[in-house]
Image 1 (cartoon, rainbow, N blue to C red):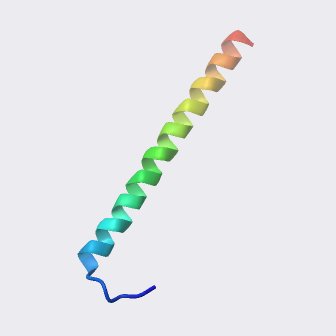
Image 2 (image 1 turned 60 degrees about the vertical axis):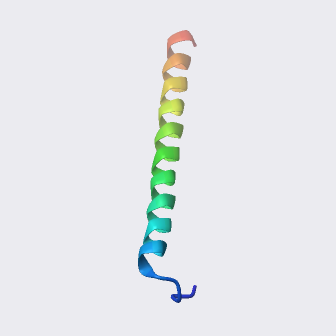
Length: 43
């Protein structure tokens, strides 16, 4: 890890990755919960 690049650019990359992980986790959790609900209803 090199700290030669400026901080705002690195901070923007970290925020972008964090936001992507939060969105991916939320979508995956919502899909899993919906699938579980449908499986309990029709199972």
